[in-house]
Amino acid sequence: MTQSQHDKAARFRALHEGPGAFVMGNIWDAGSAKIAAGLGFQAVATSSGAFANTLGRTDGAVSRDEALAHARDVAGAVDVPVSGDFENGFGHVPDYVAETIRMAADSGLVGCSIEDYAGNEADRLYEKSEAAERIAAAAEAAAGAGFPFTLTGRAENFLRGNPDLDDTIARLVAYQDAGADVLMAPGLPDLDAVKAVCDALDKPLNFMVGVPGRSFAKADLEAAGVKRISLATSLYKAALTAFIAAAREAQDDGTFGYVETLIGGGELGKLMGG
Image (tube, rainbow, N blue to C red; front, side, top):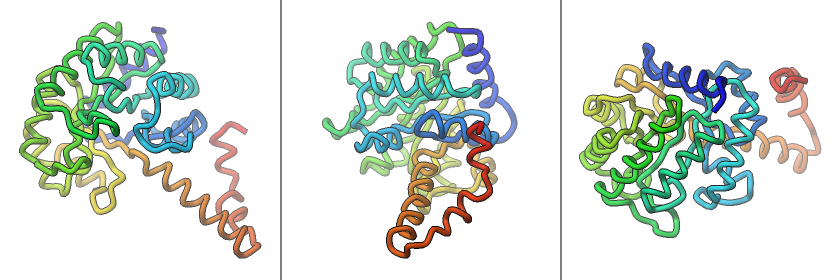
């Protein structure tokens, strides 16, 4: 741990304690992290799905070693705090999850999320008690990091075929009691559900933007009680959507208007430092 990492961790923790909500930009490499920081994001986070896609894979098909190397690259590229999307901790056993947290802290991250989906091969949600035990192990490891490492506990019900709000709340309360600093339930269906979750918790809720029809405005999320808003793969998908449009223009029309409309202003070069 360096003084810089300690300072970043303290700044990240403070963002959760200030008034209103803050938006955390999810990125996919060191370059996109520099762009997000240059645009004024006070914190960024990796996206497991976006990073996997850059390797030509689907979400869940990245190893722990690859995720840690990616985290080191991103954290070393920017002066803002970086949190990691570390899926289920890359293993089922609580001790393995705890080891993942220790490695995450050593990689330069100031926090990460651990979810209760067991991964693509197992294709199941952990039972609530099992999931809470894994969060407890992660929280104990985070407490030994030597700086305020922010652990997020994720309940994946609404993304994994179990859209049960009562069970989602019960899981989040269990993860809160097990030591998670922030809670997260991707895919909540409406603002009433978001408010119900916030009202049930004593710790901050992270709302995930990126699901069509379920990506609500910051002001509305703040009113519901949300403290942190993450962007999942949405920025990556927006970037690739622009890529597809430009490539289609070049290939199908033989024109290159995107050079003027998307590139001509030079903002990208300025944000990348040259």
